[in-house]
Amino acid sequence: MSNSLVVYFSATGITKKVASKLSQKVGADLFEIVPKEVYTSEDLDWKNPESRSSQEMGDFESRPEIQNKISGFEKYSTIYIGFPIWWYQAPTIINTFLESYDFKGKTLSVFATSGGSSLGQTETILKQISPGAQWKPGIVINSWNDSKIESWIESVAN
Image 1 (tube, rainbow, N blue to C red):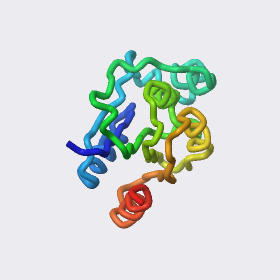
Image 2: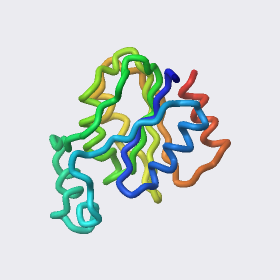
Image 3: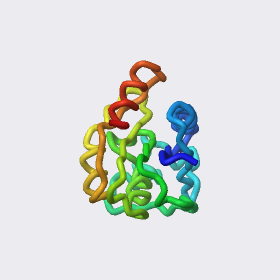
Image 4: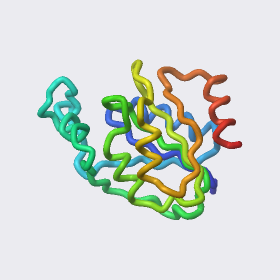
């Protein structure tokens, strides 16, 4: 059993692949955030202002429900949180996740998948939602680069 955990939300499978690879690299347990209502391709149509993802991202108070919980959460001291970037920030289901646990004394860092977006204000927003956590700088992973990922992992571990 590891004291590190890789938690991820993946709407299309890209973040899942990165999370799996990361968990193997750091020897961490792996946990998928599964929405109570799974996202369809229509839900993810960012060009449609009426799509579910557009509606959620337009409402800071949106908190999509999560159908699963982390067993033995208290044993983890370092948690890597992964997600795709939506509208230059984390999907609101990540806010739901952060509000579901007490992160006091835990080290957190985010990794995001994106075709070209930056983290934007993601880290600032998430830090406000998880008081008491020790945050380390996050990373956007557009493609896997061993040396870049290893440098980031080292910065989170120290």
